[in-house]
Image 1: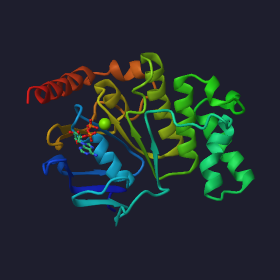
Image 2: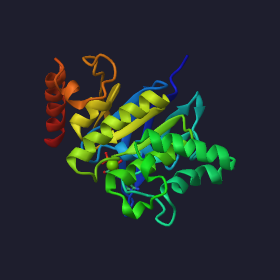
Image 3: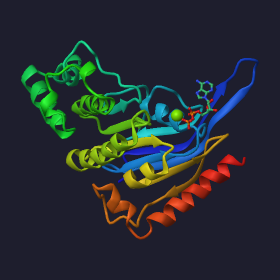
Image 4: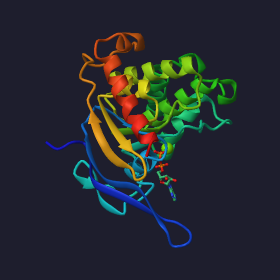
Length: 259
Ligand code: ADP
Ligand code: MG
């Protein structure tokens, strides 16, 4: 059986004013297995966001193919849920109603909406805040609301572009640990964009490392030193093999900086 998502020789060229063109993504191929966490890692300008937006159907590739279940992606779809960096909750709706919002649009009956909202709000640890308004919540909590809202629509793939970039360090690793719990509990396939090496190694079943200008696939890195998914970040950092992988990726990042 083929992978859930297949990126096949995908390139994206943007036309710039003045007749010039910029190749943001150049002949990138990789696959994402169902139920796995794939991290797109690379320096700024390596085409990570552009790739994710093509997978989301928000951008069209110039050549190549993006296949979901062997079917070419043609625009946004409910089976792909996107979480953005900026907290995008509706401040006039409670946490519960925020999470129910997408399901309401999709015509999910009220009782089921409520049940699903409760499940996913529980999963992100916000049960006590189901009737609170987002303006009363911290940045990390609001990002949890966004994740719960996206998961409640039962996407096959959760797409996240630097989802924790705006959070302080402690909240950030707590969110990373939460994502492992969510992945384990829901079985959702995830594609996460980051430029943070530690975050990538902790979260990924597979790291797709992209080089910059143009964005090319430099290497697929499998953190096989991890004995499966660990929910505790210190446990991963303490594993034999962690430091070596971090060093290797730091070198790759540094090489990119000298181009
Ligand atoms: P990353 O997310 O890895 O930082 P991006 O995908 O945002 O990289 O961008 C890759 C390259 O494509 C950058 O050089 C960026 O300036 C360029 N780019 C992205 N979007 C557009 C656009 N809409 N028009 C022109 N250039 C773009
Ligand atoms: Mg980006």
